[in-house]
Image 1 (cartoon, rainbow, N blue to C red):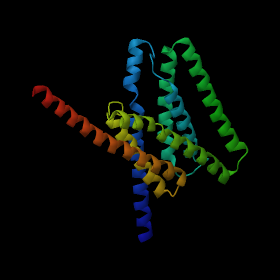
Image 2 (image 1 turned 90 degrees about the horizontal axis):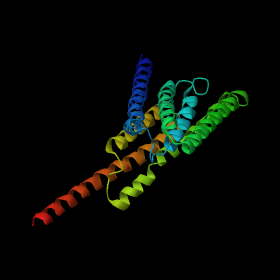
Image 3 (image 1 turned 30 degrees about the horizontal axis):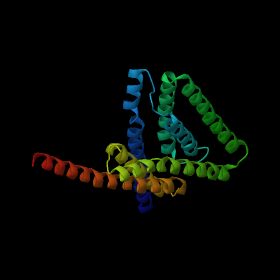
Image 4 (image 1 turned 180 degrees about the vertical axis):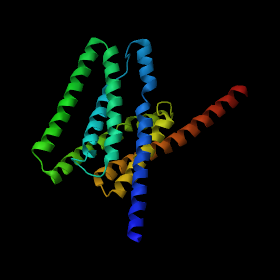
Length: 235
């Protein structure tokens, strides 16, 4: 009876952590919508780069494959969130290609084809060459590398915030969603005893926390500087 209760509690918390991770990831997937509203309104990609969406698509596809039962049984919530993410990234990429100038359009088409080819190769190798245990390890290491590179990508913004002492280019809700998603999947990975989930999301949690601390510090500094400048101007 106790054993059954413990299993039920464990399942409840692991499922809850996975669902929370899905919800916060969904918020992240929605975050580029204002950018693409501007692109469609102006019918131009202007100076925006399509590379973040290419990288995000590659990450979603690899993590989606890792979460599939044929690779790793019992973590279907990893597959669901990344399947949704892949659809969002593909939509953003197609819109970007539609409104990009010819040179940028061809580059994006080439990168998209490269991503899909690499993913197809990963699937082929993991199914045809590797057995069940090695398949999980192979795709798991790829997903860890992909996730860590994704979580590390905002570091240049962190550097910009420190240099400029301004949080103008680091949206608070985006940083908060990243932190909450990472910590949710960190808990999910810990409960599932899956290092390929909890290690990269643990790193993501730390980096997300750093962004939030910087935001709080420099937004406070910015308000104090503004108040001092107003006092000086009226003195």
